[in-house]
Image 1 (cartoon, rainbow, N blue to C red):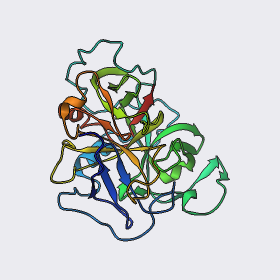
Image 2: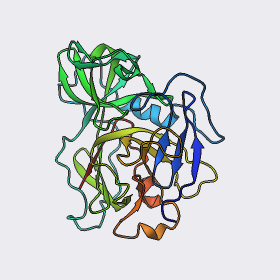
Image 3: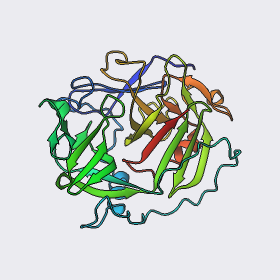
Image 4: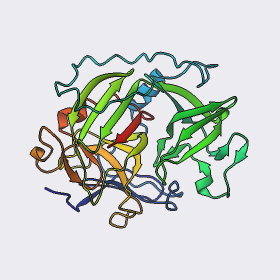
Amino acid sequence: MHASRAAIIVSVAAAAAVAVSAGLLLSSGGPPGGPPGGGATAAVAGSRPIPNARQAARLRQNAVPAGTTPGSTAPASTAPASTAPASTAPASTAPASTAPASTVIATVLSNAPRYASPGRLAAGSGPADTVLASWYDRPSVLPVIATSPGWVEVRLAQRPNGSTAWLPDSYVALGSTPYRIVINAATAWLALYDNGRLVFSAPAGVGTVQDPTPPGEYFVAFDEQPPQPNSGYGPFIIVTSAHSPAIADWEGSGDAVIGIHGPLGDDTEIGTSGARISHGCIRLHDEALERLAEVPPGTPIDVVG
């Protein structure tokens, strides 16, 4: 099917709903561009504990020893290197990455004031000026993009796309991820890098011209069990920090968050070369999605093209 409008409610926080649609994982609650507000948690049967055991193990595995600063060389990950061969697709097909081999990530330990620069608070005092320790009941695990003595600058999961904040490093626990996902929206292709080495690439279903997959620098926010019955979402859904630039409020949910999931509908729509078929989300063949199973929260996602 093409861009079905059916939506299914999955596990969310703060009297909010995360609706997974054909092409968009959508969330609501809280002010636009900000974190969800306080309130009860809604869930359906099959939702996994938060955080799930696999994510917790990956975060412990990649923890940075005490005393290590993000400005220093990140320790090598103890995660096993991928044993799967690289894609047999032509080298020119897989999106290139010139990024560092690993990325320092920061797990926010408690709600923190948002700083525009080291020592200078962001304007205002509302929810948008606080970096929360959780987003939709999942730990906030954020990539570190800059440092200063006693400070880290991190990417945020909330609108607008590209949002960042400085935090005192006392509010975070540092770790690292060896992975990076690169998506070329022009060629409809996804690649996974491990310590700077291409280990996997695959065709993808990306956003249409009307509802594009937004270019930019994002990250894995968390993963989620698919709704049941599973109508083609695959073994799990990766929720990203990207938001649709074309859709502000999907079916009254209050937001439009980009996800990576299974093919939905007819698997042949993705085919062997990818296609523009979604409302912004990334669709993968199930076997391709499974190759991303060990990618932890905080892992960078670059959307190019």
